[in-house]
Amino acid sequence: MGFHSGELAVQEQAGVSGQAGRLSAMVGRGQLRSGTADFLGSARLAVLTAHDPDGTVWSSPLFGEPGFLSAVDSGTLHIDGSLPEADPLSDMPGGQLAGVIVIDFATRRRWRINGVVTTSPDGGTDLEVDQSYGNCPKYITIRTIDTPTGSLGPQRDPVFAGDSLRAEDRRLIQRADTFFLGTTHPTSGADTSHRGGPAGFVTAVHDRLWFPDYAGNNLFNSLGNIAVDPSAALLFIDFDTGTTLQLSGTAALTWDDSAPADEVHTGRGVSFTPERVVVSGAGR
Image: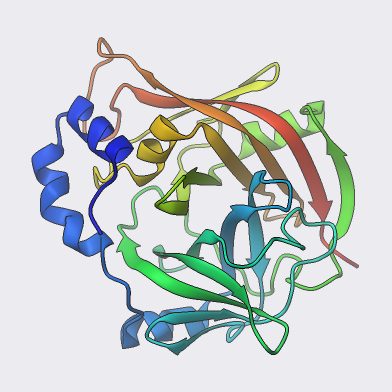
């Protein structure tokens, strides 16, 4: 599976087409290898990006004890349990393209798995794998999740649902050193990526957010999707309280060719306008 037109366009504008081309085989892998299966079995947190029944894209947290994620075989990821009713993806349609990222903050390891989501006979969710690949540990803040911050089950409580950010939502965003970005492409499907930086690296002005695109692997899966389809989702997690902030809206790439570039800063960024807001709290 090669890069789509949006990824190629962003790679070209960033001047990294040759480097990205050499890594294209990594993204095309459609198997869960034994080392990946072991990592999945130890995970406590994953994030799923998919569309709700109305076609709105969301990124949802999946919390669980080790073992709630498993490789049924080399081509199938199994997610045990079901999303809580308050989650926008609790009744997501099966048969759609979805993207999952599995992350371990303690070891700074992350793995992306994209494919077709289906309902498992045991009531959980299966993902038929199209792509499976790791990312480097850059920008991952080390933290330990000893017990799931909430759970995958029904004990997560709805707090707020609306179409604009509240003051407390902006404060959560401005404290965050981590969030997850969900993007989608009409034929290549959905993708979930981790974004990290110092607290305050995401700015919130009125109802518009902006965050930088730091130097990375130069594949531009997320930015390439945005170049074609502006629909996007953001997920923020308050790891102290278990509060989750899910946003769905539209994104646009920003380029500042005059900005000084170094091994971190690139002059690239993303502007995001939330159109739907869902806040949930850890269940009691």
